[in-house]
Image 1: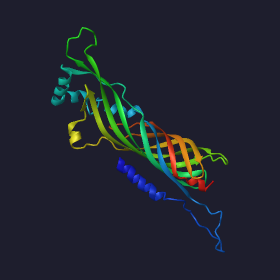
Image 2 (image 1 turned 30 degrees about the horizontal axis):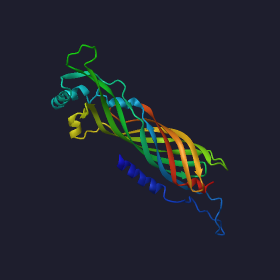
Image 3 (image 1 turned 60 degrees about the vertical axis):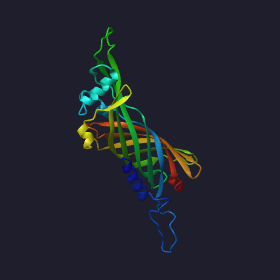
Image 4 (image 1 turned 180 degrees about the vertical axis):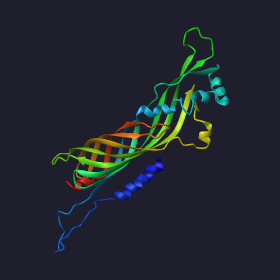
Amino acid sequence: MKSLILYTGIVLAVCFPLGTISAQNMTDNSGEQDEEAPTLVISYGLNAGAYFAHKGTANYYSGSGRHNLKEAINRRHTYNRIRESLNYDFELHQLPSDMAYSPAIMVGIFGGLHFNDRTALFASTNYTRLTARDQFTLELERPSFIEGDNIKSYTVYGKEERSEIMAGIRHTYYSPGSYLHPYVEMGGSMTATRIRQNNIRIEGSSYSIRKPVDTYYDVRDDGIGFGAYGGGGFRMDVGESYAFDLGFNSNYTRINLGDNSNYDLQFTFFVRLYLSYGPSGLN
């Protein structure tokens, strides 16, 4: 996934080179430059924020599907290690029922090609690491005089990486004399997902519940999904050379994870720092 971001960064650097570029240098018959000639201006920079993943794909890590929790804890070596930590035989009592992702930090880069102070082609690439978790229960084979006393809860969790590329059109409602300019943007998206872990934690020790054959042969159960996004926010001018964006995006996309075929909304709230403040050349 990191290589995808690096590749995208190179693409953005090529597509949006440093500085301000002219789309057309128009001259009249006298050789003088036409001041009304259209000019293309670029912006690029860094963005960071919070990523809120839809819980629709979190159940992949619950142990109810291909990577089966009951099967995993009953593998001889795993069972013996867990039994040693619990001091009792045991069996699976209940699978998790509410797997969900925790909010995560998102980082990335962006670039814009501005036709004027209002309309631009805009692209960004972002990276985040997500964790989905919930509780499952084991029933210990020990004497119990209180109902439920032999039931213990433990954590099952999954870790994944997501890299997304968004490209579309952005429209800024430029206000002369103001440092605050609202904007909206929309376009298409591509999200690449990579599974990193699917484990349980019992008495301080972690155990993978993924099928050993999948781990050994690096079987992929993830990949790339496509969708569309929309969002908005405010661009804030800071002097003549710098600017910030405060905004959000909602990405309606399919996350390619297991047999998921649904399209769900993923939300990001972010701050963008312009390293090259292109729109200032148009205002």
